[in-house]
Image 1: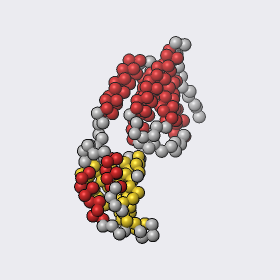
Image 2 (image 1 turned 90 degrees about the horizontal axis):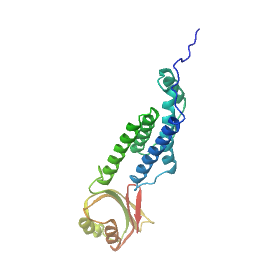
Image 3 (image 1 turned 120 degrees about the horizontal axis):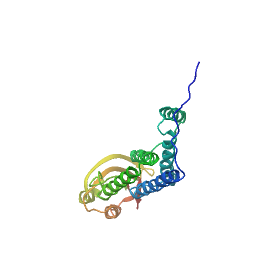
Image 4 (image 1 turned 30 degrees about the vertical axis):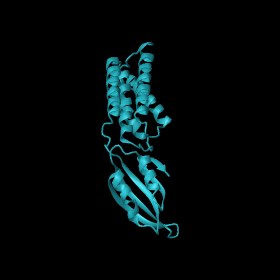
Length: 225
């Protein structure tokens, strides 16, 4: 059996091109990580993920420099990566998009296409900031999960007037007896009216006689009285 080795010559990079490619990918990766952090103001940002974005950009640059024009080296890399098992669960779809963004920018730097790496990345980053500024895709009125407890001796109609004043729509999810039958806990999916503050609604509801433990949850954030 005869084995053939890859005879494709390695592309020679000068001592100036190597740090230039990696340095450019470092700067672009840092900008991508910075924009990710800015556009994630309402959620917890992992420092590890930010470092991963920067590292991926630089690693992709070095990988492209290694592969060069060799098809065999490209398939060898795919085979090596197929052995690795990634068990980290990506929380949001946008995280995957930023990972591919970092890989693409790193590949552009690796082939020495500086114009594409710089102007392409800058264009995408500017549009991402613009979309975040105009809150593209965000609902006009956010949906909240409302929970509160009402004394069993009080009528459930006592808080309906508050709902009508502050909410554009609401749907009851559950009702259960708590605290040895002294209180009834209600769970509602609610949507507030425009220009209504969460604090105003919660204070009004908490001031209703018999109402306790008011909580309003939206997206992973919680406010409680």
